[in-house]
Image (cartoon, rainbow over all chains, first blue to last red; front, top):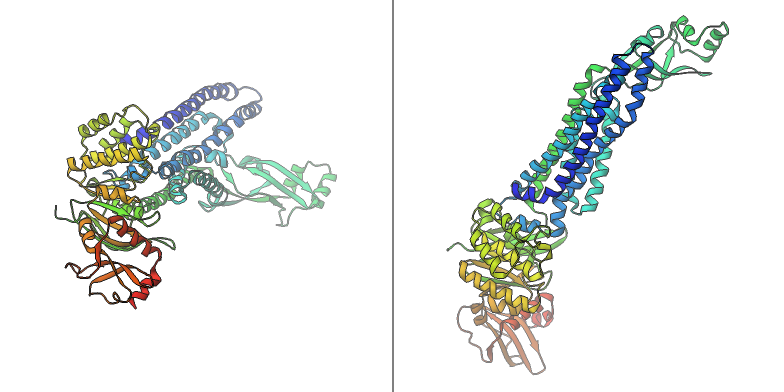
Length: 329
Length: 297
């Protein structure tokens, strides 16, 4: 069975290994590049270091993002192009009736396919994930936003879980749909929807977020106000960042010391006296509430993300093992 | 060798609302070459897939060589199955297929397989996708036979072959059966093929088993009876009318004598296998049923 699995998967495995090797080579090159830039811009920095850090972030940000997206797509592609045809190609060519009438039970056939082909998929995806995590290390340290959805899902453990899930998903959809193209499309669609739901709906609730009241005076020591707006309606923070943490609050209203919201009139009144908006806010004892997931929850979240994906994968594998011995004709 | 090759009890397979096989009850002794005949869509492939364990019955029970089909590796090893259109892996070579057989069957007879491939003149390096229909069938037959099963099942092995290749394949199959000492079930919609190679017959039509038994017994028990109209209205117990045809003056019946004793009826004559099978197929399709009911009443 191992021989047959290898014989059937040989071409595509070698081909994919080539792609993985190419990406890995590029990551090694990128890692060296990032480390050079880190030494120049951060370690050996003497003047205008903040700017230098921004330069580094800008320089590698889009490239790493692209590879991250690739790493997100990899499990989906493996699910659609490896796992789906594993079943549907046999059904479409009728060869399932040849292979399943040899002296190997369908359970064993599936177990070997799942272990070997699924194992290689997880291995490839996981290896790239770890390599990317390592390569992007200095960059991630500077940017310090590991909870960024595209970063979080393309580092450390998460891709392992995704690879497991996408593979078993492709297998089960293949068993149910039986037509290669239909099953591929469904697998891709379901998996992309799953990733979106995971990032936007589930992940923010892995743990009860922390809500903290921050005084305006401390705003830029606790975190950093990236975008702040003043208008007739009042004052609000559009974007607030806390290093390494995941800020869940969207628009953040700012309150005065007496608990009422800062209004446009307040700010206008203050500005006519010649103060900067910052001085005005501090003068008003302004505070705001931020809801976020603290930075030290990163690994908990990685494990939970992996656990959910792996758990679903186990359920899907169970479905395949239940369904296949019952026959597919 | 006394275990029946196949035993089925009210075996039924439904796909949604469509019933592919209805309450088939069969008992096939060992050592037979069984022909399964019937029109396309009669349920032949369904019955054979059930026997090979590729699918499970909706209700009823089936046993092959005394065991649930495909229950485990040993049950699978006992049965060689060649599916319809003799599927092979187009991308794998002939030699790869033999390796597949070797790796997937503990009882694999490698020398037998290689000899057979050499005898057939197949190039071991050739991709199976580039073989002719006849060669593919031969390759599939070789794989099924080299695992040394006790039962070989063929689903329409010759349907895709031209007449010459068909004859050669069946000839070859017969030699193989003689050499291996194996029971065989093969399906066909060509009665001539079945008559040439089989000694046991199952007629399947409209998802039901119409008749089954050793061909010699069946031929001995089926008769065409001709008599003046009205004289054949009552028949001895155990003599079943399969078809009746009336003209103004005379009645022609095809009857199945299930009494086990010689049929004692004037005007009774033997019929050929093809006529017998066709009579059952016509009855299943409902042709001639009205007259049949008239006779029964």
